[in-house]
Length: 446
Image (cartoon, rainbow, N blue to C red; front, top):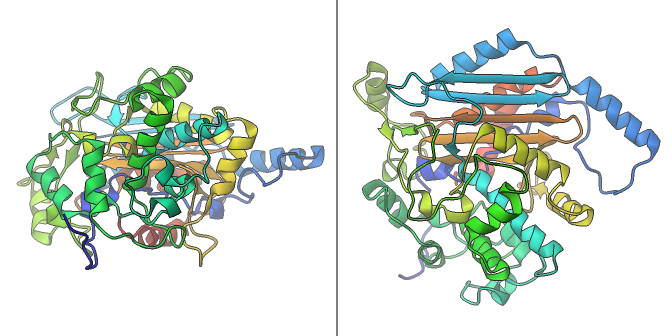
């Protein structure tokens, strides 16, 4: 396979949103009148701490549960969801909405412990594992990738840190026609990480290392392989030993590549379109004829529940629950899994994805920042999820939906999370729509 010199195809709508860092709560900052959590200083005066506590108290608002229920209902119906789950926690209490059912034809309502595929939220597991290895002295974020993977093109000039924060320039294998065609024709195909890297390395880089930002799942697959090499364990065992057991995340797992099932009790996933069908720029939405057929009930969504996710591996193969995602995002936001120095290293790594716009969404070492919230989003065909935690205001938002992407190309869980922000924070959040548009441009539709 030779390197392609022409401009690469834009990814399909499914892979464009799949494993994508859809940090569409960037405008949370506009909804809250405080600065983002964690300054560059590791010590605070008593006065500064008191001010932060006062700001945190004033930034959250009591839940209007009736209005929130209406937003969930409207959003779920608008986005043609079969089931959705919302979990919001603030110092004022907890809001939970488990809407719809576990699947078409089911009467069982989802719960906070229902299992779903969480896509790119898996990246935060991989990133945290790498940072724990940094903390243990087994590698440095400044190490060249060639030290661990001599086969990586230009790897002597790409650092581990640039893999973590998506600034390596390495081509994203999910943008290849080969992968998208295979996902349509063989959805249960078993992929090995080396096959994914071969797809990536056959294409030219987007830019020289450190000279740009492009979301690329190739980065996180490489990080997973490096973690296995240094820890001497399969990535699933690394996650289990370091995170799931430590945090009692009993509903969370990383399946074997050959396992396309989800442990009970799980939600089924649904998607209306294939990958090649929406490959290319300007193909976010299905055609008008197909949208009409969906509305008329003559075109049904495909059940994607048992599609094999091995093509995502350490970038998106995880399974979890709303409860466990809340536990996880709080742990990484509070720094419970890293020592103070390494946590600060992680927070300091977060910089704007658009260097020309300091207000653009931030991304760092396996972690996105959305205003005062830290977290990630994830999508696989049939599933979309969002998790965010604001350590200053102690606000957690977790949402998932089981029909994704929508026929119009939307990410339902992210859109609903955005719509619920004003019910957790004081102040208007109308500016979020503009930030979402900007985010889509920054991520290049990946």
